[in-house]
Image (cartoon, rainbow, N blue to C red; front, side, top):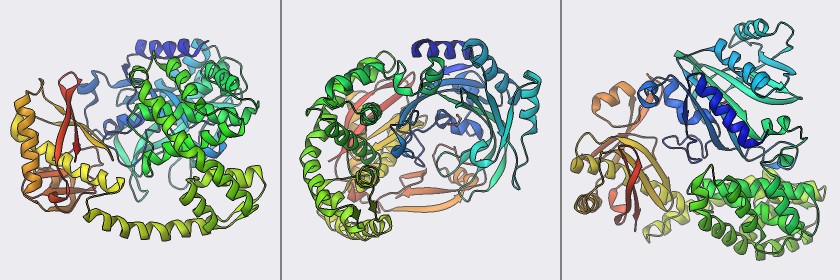
Length: 561
Ligand code: SER
């Protein structure tokens, strides 16, 4: 079965079982600053598990299904083996008070054995510990479906999911194994896991399942690794064509990393030295290094990116519309790193096989070598060692220095990218308050997304803003900036925050403390922060675009100059 057929089958199957198909959310999570990237299908649905948002109102059903783009870099050093990837697509079905374990397990069993025609080797269920009792219900349901099925019982490490980020819904899971490969993770969200790791029962039980498309294609197509599936064939062919040396491991890393980079850039992230931008930068630089190892000529990575763009363009249209930007960003990063790569490699040669923390840090500082690249070369290729403790100390020393340095730069108006994000955060609050003033109190926040380069804000409003309205919005934001309003923060309960009249997406656990940020007497919002101390730090606010985001929702992009 081709991956296109698998996608279709999955969607049709869950649609026929009363699920509303929801498009993949962006890789850059909206309204969830606890993680850098979207790592699971359930992430866009987090507020529905707690009841903070109404799933029926938004989707017309208690059950949804999606094919979600996801990025996970925790196992980046394992990429190149049979199945670890930094980007993957996750097939998932979800229920928020609709169905529970019985249907979830029945659906999964039916889909794997009947629709996909695959035999299940065994399943695992949560075996219980001192904290949470064993999931006997799931065990019973599996036995009712197939009295001969082999059931393993594991602990929290394997059969308990979540939360994504620091807090969120979580619960026991049951996993399905096919050909020795873990295929599908069915999570039963029964608890809310708080920041201090306490579990509190959720009022409503939820279902969250996730199945990696790449792994499913691998077992369905009878391949021994994901790179042989039709999801990777064209990309791997191109890489082989461009590499004089046929080194499969390096070629796989290039395929994975460039695929991730393409998708990350398509969601509005650019290479930088902080947060998401730095993850992207590391992925591209690691690919540049592998391309160098297999002898690819300069410019090859953009060609590889192009294959990914063409391959996925029919599903993710923004890859095509942003194709040129994606190729350019990858090319720019390759150009800027390539000279440093050879200098850094020479320096590494001189340093020998055992690298001190200071040397590792200098390689990063002078030549832009991400630490895991140095580790890869020294440990995996040369069998040497890198003093990680020492490296971390250097990093800490340096970041203390750079805080001081950036405080200095700040005065001169040249903020680092972290500082820029903080400014955009505050500007977003001002914008929201201004929109309500000018367009009316019915304007609600529908999404927000910030990069060091710009802010993006989605809000409910039925029609396009007139030029005059846009001008009024800009003027009032700038007026509030010029007024030099102080910001302040208070931690209160959700109830108190609501009473105070604070705006926000109430997607946090009830009864928990939330931060309320106040800007002068002009804006009051629930938000994780951080914010600037005074609006005078923001510079000049300018709307760069006003467009439709989806039905009844407008989107504004703006910059600070
Ligand atoms: N959240 C779980 C996972 O990502 C199931 O979807 O594995």
